[in-house]
Length: 129
Image 1: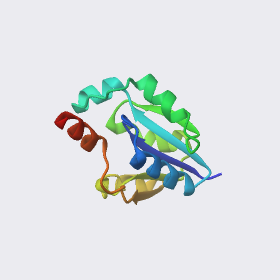
Image 2: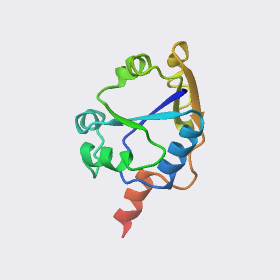
Image 3: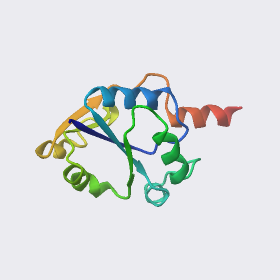
Image 4: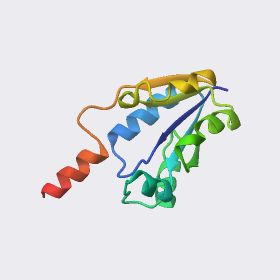
Protein backbone atom coordinates (compact mmCIF):
# COMPACT_ATOMS: atom_id res chain seq x y z
CA UNK A 1 0.00 0.00 0.00
CA UNK A 2 1.35 3.40 -1.00
CA UNK A 3 0.80 6.08 1.67
CA UNK A 4 0.61 9.79 0.89
CA UNK A 5 0.68 12.71 3.33
CA UNK A 6 -0.20 16.37 2.92
CA UNK A 7 -0.43 19.31 5.32
CA UNK A 8 -2.53 22.42 5.69
CA UNK A 9 -5.00 24.41 7.72
CA UNK A 10 -7.96 23.48 5.48
CA UNK A 11 -10.17 26.28 6.75
CA UNK A 12 -13.06 27.57 4.61
CA UNK A 13 -12.99 24.46 2.45
CA UNK A 14 -13.07 25.23 -1.28
CA UNK A 15 -12.58 23.54 -4.65
CA UNK A 16 -8.80 24.08 -4.49
CA UNK A 17 -8.66 21.99 -1.30
CA UNK A 18 -10.76 19.26 -2.89
CA UNK A 19 -8.53 19.27 -6.00
CA UNK A 20 -5.30 18.82 -4.04
CA UNK A 21 -6.83 16.10 -1.87
CA UNK A 22 -8.13 14.26 -4.95
CA UNK A 23 -4.82 14.56 -6.81
CA UNK A 24 -2.85 13.52 -3.72
CA UNK A 25 -5.05 10.44 -3.26
CA UNK A 26 -4.55 9.54 -6.96
CA UNK A 27 -0.82 9.18 -6.20
CA UNK A 28 -1.38 6.31 -3.77
CA UNK A 29 -3.74 4.11 -1.81
CA UNK A 30 -4.01 5.85 1.56
CA UNK A 31 -4.10 9.61 2.19
CA UNK A 32 -3.12 11.13 5.52
CA UNK A 33 -3.96 14.80 6.01
CA UNK A 34 -2.14 16.67 8.78
CA UNK A 35 -4.09 19.78 9.76
CA UNK A 36 -2.69 22.65 11.77
CA UNK A 37 -3.97 22.76 15.33
CA UNK A 38 -5.45 25.99 16.65
CA UNK A 39 -2.35 26.45 18.82
CA UNK A 40 -0.01 25.99 15.86
CA UNK A 41 -2.04 28.45 13.80
CA UNK A 42 -1.65 30.98 16.63
CA UNK A 43 2.14 30.50 16.51
CA UNK A 44 2.05 31.07 12.72
CA UNK A 45 -0.07 34.19 13.16
CA UNK A 46 -3.00 32.55 11.32
CA UNK A 47 -6.61 32.61 12.43
CA UNK A 48 -8.94 29.86 11.24
CA UNK A 49 -12.69 30.35 11.19
CA UNK A 50 -13.34 26.72 12.14
CA UNK A 51 -11.76 25.03 15.16
CA UNK A 52 -9.32 22.16 14.74
CA UNK A 53 -12.01 19.68 15.77
CA UNK A 54 -14.51 21.04 13.22
CA UNK A 55 -11.89 21.07 10.44
CA UNK A 56 -10.99 17.48 11.36
CA UNK A 57 -14.65 16.36 11.13
CA UNK A 58 -15.06 18.09 7.76
CA UNK A 59 -11.92 16.48 6.32
CA UNK A 60 -12.82 13.03 7.64
CA UNK A 61 -16.07 13.26 5.65
CA UNK A 62 -14.21 13.69 2.34
CA UNK A 63 -13.96 10.47 0.36
CA UNK A 64 -10.30 11.00 -0.59
CA UNK A 65 -9.11 11.31 3.03
CA UNK A 66 -8.29 8.14 4.96
CA UNK A 67 -6.81 9.64 8.13
CA UNK A 68 -6.50 13.07 9.74
CA UNK A 69 -3.71 13.85 12.19
CA UNK A 70 -2.78 17.07 14.02
CA UNK A 71 0.07 19.29 12.86
CA UNK A 72 1.53 20.77 16.04
CA UNK A 73 4.75 22.30 14.71
CA UNK A 74 6.95 22.76 11.63
CA UNK A 75 9.46 20.16 12.80
CA UNK A 76 7.19 17.09 12.97
CA UNK A 77 7.17 16.27 9.26
CA UNK A 78 10.11 13.85 9.33
CA UNK A 79 8.69 11.94 12.29
CA UNK A 80 5.23 11.86 10.67
CA UNK A 81 6.71 10.41 7.47
CA UNK A 82 8.70 7.79 9.40
CA UNK A 83 6.03 6.93 12.00
CA UNK A 84 3.26 6.54 9.39
CA UNK A 85 5.45 4.74 6.79
CA UNK A 86 4.71 7.45 4.21
CA UNK A 87 5.83 6.93 0.63
CA UNK A 88 5.12 10.43 -0.73
CA UNK A 89 4.75 13.93 0.71
CA UNK A 90 2.49 16.26 -1.30
CA UNK A 91 2.12 20.05 -1.16
CA UNK A 92 0.97 22.84 -3.46
CA UNK A 93 3.56 24.21 -5.90
CA UNK A 94 3.67 27.51 -4.00
CA UNK A 95 5.81 25.60 -1.45
CA UNK A 96 8.18 24.26 -4.13
CA UNK A 97 11.62 23.46 -2.71
CA UNK A 98 10.63 24.14 0.90
CA UNK A 99 10.28 20.48 1.81
CA UNK A 100 13.03 18.91 -0.30
CA UNK A 101 14.75 17.85 2.94
CA UNK A 102 12.11 15.09 3.09
CA UNK A 103 13.52 13.47 -0.06
CA UNK A 104 15.83 11.46 2.22
CA UNK A 105 12.69 9.81 3.66
CA UNK A 106 10.09 9.71 0.86
CA UNK A 107 9.15 11.08 -2.55
CA UNK A 108 8.28 14.80 -2.50
CA UNK A 109 5.64 16.05 -4.94
CA UNK A 110 4.57 19.66 -5.51
CA UNK A 111 1.19 19.83 -7.25
CA UNK A 112 -0.10 22.87 -9.15
CA UNK A 113 -2.58 24.92 -7.15
CA UNK A 114 -6.07 25.57 -8.47
CA UNK A 115 -5.98 28.98 -10.14
CA UNK A 116 -8.21 31.76 -8.88
CA UNK A 117 -9.12 30.33 -5.46
CA UNK A 118 -7.59 30.34 -1.99
CA UNK A 119 -8.78 30.82 1.56
CA UNK A 120 -7.02 34.21 1.58
CA UNK A 121 -8.92 35.26 -1.55
CA UNK A 122 -12.24 34.17 0.00
CA UNK A 123 -11.54 36.20 3.14
CA UNK A 124 -10.46 39.23 1.09
CA UNK A 125 -13.54 39.02 -1.14
CA UNK A 126 -15.85 38.71 1.87
CA UNK A 127 -14.27 41.78 3.49
CA UNK A 128 -15.19 43.82 0.41
CA UNK A 129 -18.90 43.06 0.78
